Image (cartoon, rainbow, N blue to C red):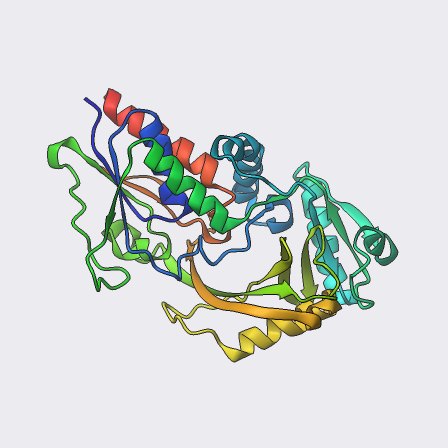
Amino acid sequence: MAVQVTVLGGGVIGLSVAWFAARDGFPVTVVDRGSPHGGSWVAGGMLAPITEAWPGDEHVLDLGVESLERWPSFAADLGLELSEVGTLAVAVDRADAQVLDQLCAYLGTRGRSARRVTGRELRGLEPGLGPSVRSGLHVPGDLSVDNRALLDALRAACRDHGVRFAEAEPGAEPGAEPETGAGRNGGVTVIAAGAWSGGLHPKLRGVIRPVKGEILRLVARPGALPPPRHTVRAHVEGRPVYLVPRPGGLVLGATQYEAGFDTGVKVRGVLDLLRDAEAVWPAITEYALVESAAGFRAGSPDNAPVVDWLEPGVLAATGHHRNGLLLAPVTARRALALLREREDS
């Protein structure tokens, strides 16, 4: 008889692990607090390991590329559509262009490539880019997904495979110690609570931390220039900003703070996002601002996820930082492999 699996966390990682496990025959229960500040809900939906790459994060890059290759079949199984237009990484001044040059050179050392493009070539791809955009990189292999549609699809897939859902105790604070049930009746607890995972097991304390980020959602008003077709990632005076198209609008993100579990949306963060996005895509001044939100990424010391046993009966699947959506397929496969090993031992 398969062991009972209890997944703590109902974000993309927790739901993906639950779906894979249930599909493989494990009885699964997902326990979730339903926080509106979860990283999966407050996300842009970029599946872009190449433009996320940076020296020192080689393992994250390689893992991201592996997961990206699995995303088309992952999405097809969920009945989800992916945007396959790709990413434009753009710069608005010389210093920002140098950052992209460094990224391009680094990618070359890792056997990855991105095509350098001039400002004129960029406007050929996206005529609505602002006049200050001077150069960039074209990464046609990147994907993106509607993160909220993904969450809905994963919940439906879990239910179709018999996953039970339970709410965490009312009023439980982030990081509160749960009743894991580890080891009882041979059961397994999977800690996949994102930024809150650090409070759920001693081995995760000081390892997983919340990294605050703010996003804005905009809708194009009648007569405004439609959103870009590509995901646009930019450096504006050293500040990163991304614009991810949605039907009739955009998701703008994302600020990044070490601020604990502060749920407030800072006026400074909103101003920075809007100002920088306007430099990249001036038409946003004619859009309607329909949402501002703060969420928490699950940071780790090396930006790499923790997907391994913490003790017999307790498995971690957390610490994905900016790459939770991207790494969902490989994380779920890895977690399932670990569950199978335990059951076979």
